[in-house]
Length: 461
Ligand code: FRU
Image (cartoon, rainbow, N blue to C red; front, side, top):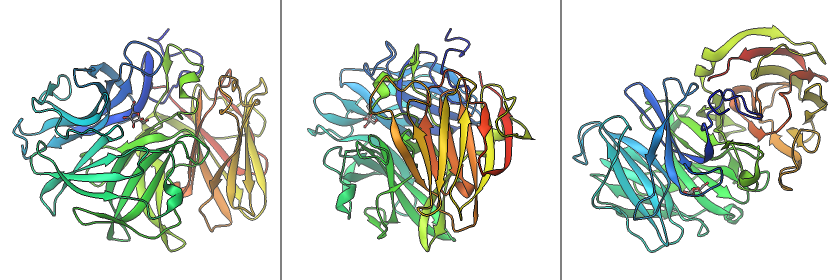
């Protein structure tokens, strides 16, 4: 039943709604010790439709408590993706520390609307002046707002879908918005799919400020379908100027991390969660009474790799709160884990290698390290479990760059009932893939990997 979260394929350490459809994470904000996660949700069924904001809360981004639906369709349209901020200085006049959310009102046109909550997200009041950014564009959505201290204003990023652009708008009071600039990719090959769900992040690299612009594209991702690219550069309060890198750069090389954006109001930590799915097959994944889960929450950092900025992601430290101690793993033998686990192993990068995760029914996920290409490959095919629900789900080889110059690479692998998330050391590479084996892969054939260790992760329900 949905109340015990034990259905076939039900995630045990990831957020998934008790029932019905979910897509993008929305409105993530940290307020009074609580992490909020809103999400694109159909409260009435297991397919995309009736777009509303579902809601969940957590004290650690790992254990989630689902709350009543926060925003439902209104006379301006569906409630599409958006964000939340804490209005510390009461710039909007709704009250000090009001939670102010922005979303796209989607109907014939896509316009930007606002609502606020004075009771920590329990109830929302729509702003009477909606839409705050009226428009007659069909592709203009997914507002993400942050406070830009130097210019004393709020900045909103908006995506232009098939027009491949991100617009920046500015406001002093969250109500009146002025166009600032439009970013277009300097590299033609980034102009693919629809541009959606932007986020502009202030980060630092070797003590110097850098800005990172996230843009989700669909289709055109690294495995086909959905994917999230990023540009690194500078932002002067009005215009984003990218550094010349070899774009697109991807925040994740697997097929299933989309529409991810970051939490507001988390100080120096940059915390992202993504929708662990892909529009190629999201509507067909073989689960009921719910559809889709979020990725594990991740902390993003910038490092220098081969003289260039590289965005890294690691699972947030809060994951330790559900972890048991480490145990050694013997190849080909059941690991003795419950429903989810964290596996760590090391492979040489100087020779080809492999390892396999499997269950005793013979379902498996095979990993291959290609030393020449410096890549980790994962096969997702008829052997991994149920793939028959959509013909784009089988991928001959998911390919992720190792992003290391070292002679050995350590992988941190988080396995749940229907997902695998792989991170190379320091998070220099992330690869996320959903899988549908009849039972969890609880055996590792370790191949030429060494130092194979596992720690059980306790279910969050
Ligand atoms: C991304 C997206 C957003 C939109 C939402 C609608 O997955 O297409 O651009 O706001 O989903 O559910």
